[in-house]
Amino acid sequence: MTAFLGIEVFLGGRATPSLHLDPQSGIPGYLLAFLLLYTAGLCVLLWVARKMRRRYPVAKGVLSAGFVLGSVLAYLTGQRGEFLLYLLLLGALVFCASGDILLGIANKSHSKVRAKPFVAGSLCFLLAHLFFCTLFFTEAAFRPLDLIFPAVLVALLFYLSKKGKIRLKKMWPLGYSYTALVGLMASKAVICGFRVGILSGLGLFTAVGAVLFLVSDVILLFLYFGVKRLHWLRTGNLITYYSGIALIGLSAHWY
Image (cartoon, rainbow, N blue to C red):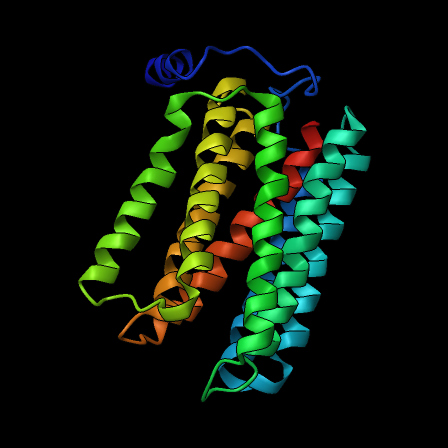
């Protein structure tokens, strides 16, 4: 516990942003029940991804609708603080859900990825991260510490590209822009999580969700642009992404 407190002070203290009325409140049982049901849906999606690829976009759309509706439920049954700030979160989730469906269409076939829906889906996620960044920077002002994740990720992408492990080709502007933005989102989300208390429901769901989202995007980079296509990458991406986005969405309970 002392270590957590020290990190929180280093990241700006335990000052609680005004939009969160009681970030230290516990995790309600209905959120845990929703996560169990959602996990069952994720298992179904993993099965569809392997056995019923034609149904893949539909399965992704259903589960994506789940994290959007779960977030709305969490907000309405929670503390219902600053509504306009929750709209930023909801907008980000809707763009993520749209990106999910488009990427599902792009990956409907086992043999190849369809370029147009892939680019459209990537742009949806880019917009989603703009919403996320706006939300988190509203909660806590910019600090140089925020640039750690994006700087490391962009440097890693540059290194892997030079080594021939990653081939972005004509997609390099989108690839570098997205990498920097998702790194910035995750960095600020983790800092916000520590500021409100990493052991609180709000801090835990926000920080862990953002880290899982970040990990999913790193996996996605190798899945689409890596020289070697490993079968476990898609499974790893789906598990980390859908887990992370659900936790971020359910953090609305403490808004």
